[in-house]
Length: 341
Image (cartoon, rainbow, N blue to C red; front, side):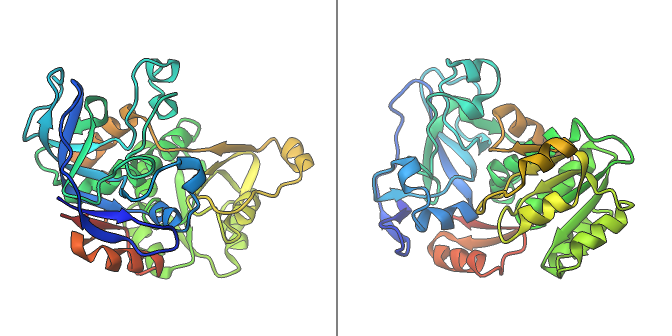
């Protein structure tokens, strides 16, 4: 089958022929890929940022946001059958460790991460497990929802966590209205009655956010912190969700936060530099967010089927993978880029 592989760090990806994955274990599921999301993490992989952490052996197939149709199943699989439309949770988990048994499978002690530390979905087929596949509504198409498997799931996990503390009349600032942020805005709109303020340096991204649920849009032009403080009566927001995490976003995000507020870190790339005396004197909370759980993905698919979360996409054939990578790297993608084998 055709697959796009990492052949070396700081080198372009290559399209090659590899063996099609087959069922070898009782809980294996092979998925025929209908859509594979192109994520900024993929750029970081090519830059070598994940080399030591993942320990993956090159070459390997990239791609961790996947959806498609069940192609083959192991003898013990009962939750899906051949032909079912599915979205794939990004982790393959054991189901036996304490985290898995607590429903917190994102912290599985023995997880594998297709596209990060084993073969992913920039290909015609992907091998995963019965624990990782979620059947999707017949009205949804795999190429339309593929990026919800990670970008959407990550955004849902953070927004849903924030929503548990937000009350009607509270303000929530969303930094970044791109691939993750535009999903987070929709999730917040579906789950809370909080006032949503979106900050992004791209005016088009701000306009998009305002059409999908943001109450206020602020262009990050140097005066955005003051603009947010003005919108919040000078106090700052109860919650800030930072989908950027670099380029000064963390400094600005902390400055937009009110006393005892929650600062959710989702995007990454720089360090948070806050004097500890400021943390204790204002009792702000710094909260990390990884990808969401299997149950988070199931809940997100309900919102997608109800039309409350819609993924804005740009689609590319598999052999145009480099165009998708370049467009993402150069800021030409609104929403998410999707490869369609």
